[in-house]
Image (cartoon, rainbow, N blue to C red; front, side, top):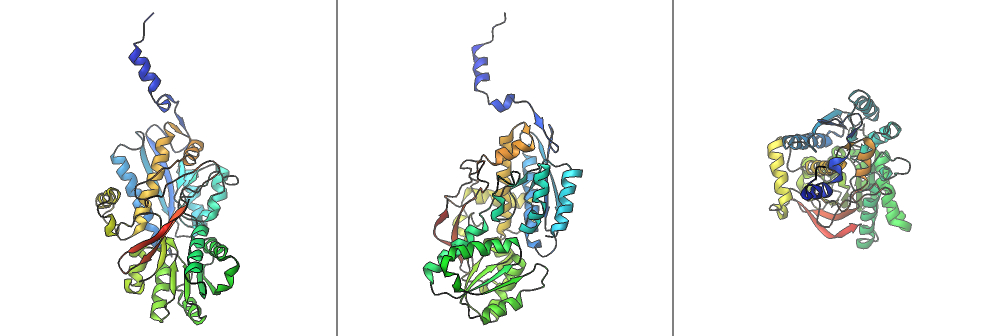
Amino acid sequence: MKLVPIAALLVAALASPAAFAQKKYDPGATDKVIKIGNTNPYSGPASSYGTIGKAIGAYWKMVNDKGGVNGRMIEWISYDDGYSPPKTVEMVRKLVEQDQVLIVFQTLGTPPNTAIQKYLNTKMVPQSFVATGATKWNDPRNFPWTIGWQPNYQTEGRIYAEHILKNNPKAKIGVLYQNDDYGKDYLKGFRDGLGDKTSMIVKEVSYEVSDPTVDSQIVQLQASGADTFFNITIPKFAAQAIRKAYDTGWKPTHYLNNVSASIGSVLTPAGLDKSVGLISTQYFKDPTDAQWKDDPAIKEFHAFMKKYYPEGNLLDPFNLYAHLVSETLHQVLKQSGNNLTRANVMKQAASLKNYRPEGLLPGIRINTDASDFAPIESEQLTRFDGMVFQRFGPIIGK
């Protein structure tokens, strides 16, 4: 009988179990390729978010240049849905039934994701790390194939409400919100945060994404006598609201939802001088802030942008957001090893423990488990000083 050297036995014993795991694949994965599907509003009223899809595509090109994920190349398939839910449904069906992607990743917007959630869960296709903070994505019992990524809107709404109650308990509040699940989710959290003080809200007005402007809504809010403004809008309308409020002489304490807190896509077109004093939140580092100029993660991000997405705007935090969420999926795919079934990818997405892309703010980590599909649950308040958003106060949340 041939004896096996002890050293060989030790190597076998210490090797990762994944190295010996039988390869398992669902549609969209092979020995050579992993197909990832996406929709993004490259056109339409939310086209400012289109840079997210482009930056994610650049990230996977970088990964492929470095050898892929566990030796497999990433095939990134991204379609323009124009922020139109019927179009999202059409494009996602194409991704699943024709392109046969392994997962759908970072589909953007609350209404578009709502339109495809039941379909993807019925098909048992991961709706991975969606690009919306609606609270509904953390519902593993009813929608086990859908998982969020960013902090949820209700939590953020409560943070602003609590700040107002502490700093201006006699505030007269005006609210502008998008008339859909996204806007109503923020508004619910804000109202919950005010508790029995909701009478502080003197005026609520809504807009539709098909509206050309929100100018008339801003005039209504100004006329209400509100001295505090909660601005629940996507970038196009956020810029309009900031500019119109300033131009009409209305100078409320202005809270801007995080999804539009972009110097490049919102504050610059609105006018940086017109944006001074805006309060929002952050959960990842601002790549334009001088305090991070020597930070290794930001230096790496700048190098990535220069090489793989040179036409992208470094002033736009959506590009760093795209890099961070892609890092998270990258980690999930690495953890999935050779078991590239949709079920295992979801299992790994729900098994992140203190995972930390270094571009997140200090103290913020990603944690998920089978009963908690909310990866990031912490934020910090910020105030725009005319140049950058300055963070203040403690990290709030888990």
